[in-house]
Each structure stands twice: as C-alpha cells, then as structure tokens.
Length: 219
Image 1 (tube, rainbow, N blue to C red):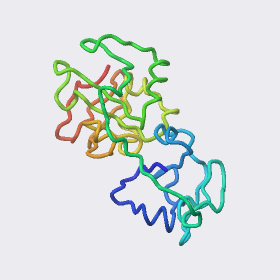
Image 2: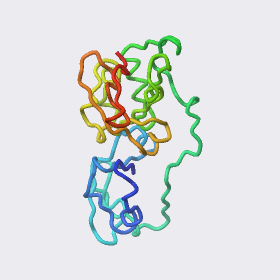
Image 3: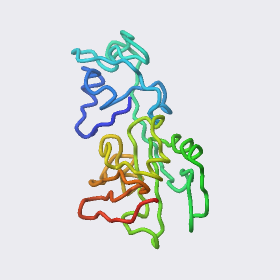
C-alpha cells in the first residue's frame, strides 16, 4: 500500500489490523500494488477496494482486478507488515541526467527519450539544478515530486515547454528544497503558478509567497 495523505494523522494500527477503511480515499488517499516497483512508480494499481467492517483489517476484499475475499487481518495467520525505508540516499550517485547545458555539459535528449527516462523516476521525483550565476539561492537545487501515475504525464512538455504549476499543486505534485524533504513529503513549497507558453519549470513557484522570484525557469 502507498498512501498519499499526511501520515502524521493516519492511524496505521487501527486501519491495517482492526478496521480497514478501503472505502475511504481509494485512488485519492492511497493505492494498492502487487510489487514495490509498481508502488514506487505508481503503475498498475489495484482496481477494487472496500472496507469499514469492525474487526476486518487490511485489505478486506480489495484485489488487483476485483473482489478477493478472506485475505484480511486478523483473519489470516502468519502475516508480516513492513515499511519501506531505504537506509542511505547517495543523491549524487542516484541521478540519471536526462538534460544538461552549459557548466553541466551538453545532453539534449529529444522529447521521446526525455519522457522515457523521466517516467522511470523512483517515486516520481525529478531534480532541477542550476548554477549560482544563473539562478538565485532558493532555485539552485530543487525537487518536484509527482503523486499521480507517470504513464499519463508528459514531463518534457511540463518541465521544459509550458509548466502547469497552476494545476494540481499539493494534489498532483509538490516542490521541495531538498531530496530528503521530497522523500518524506516534508516542507513543501507553498506558492506555485504556471500556464505560460515558453515558460518551463518552475515558473514563479517558491517556498513561500514572499520569496517568489521571476526568471528562474527553464525556457
């Protein structure tokens, strides 16, 4: 299971072990997947879910393509819950460069190649770096995390050509100032805009309304 809502207010024990609420927020607050790779990329989510029965825990009758009964907790013996927590993030070693110019060298992928690599992003996270002589401090190393499936997302168009920061801010995506914040969902930026032809990511989006800057985008 991958949850998209705020885990600080989520009662995992109650939900998973005693009264699964699969009827509340399926495909909006959470999704279910059959593999870790699918969960990280948001692909192939299960298509059926139910819940709200006392003493019937996760996953009730939820299934990949339809109702699947009698596989819930605490009905099933010999089960184990785990939380995915990678122990070390070596940010510089983990990034696949798909576009670069100037001091970063030259790598100009076409739209098809750019999108192919971008859609393989773990957890839907993209990094935009910019040198001090080109960008102001808040914009030199920033991260966008998309929560929707990347199969239907056009990264090249959105990031490079016409950034749509006006659509889905805090719902479909968030922007962060560090990789650690992007992973944990902490301290997202609070202002975003977009929808101007020829103005790419991140338009005037900023950590706060008072700190927004113009001219920091890809164009």
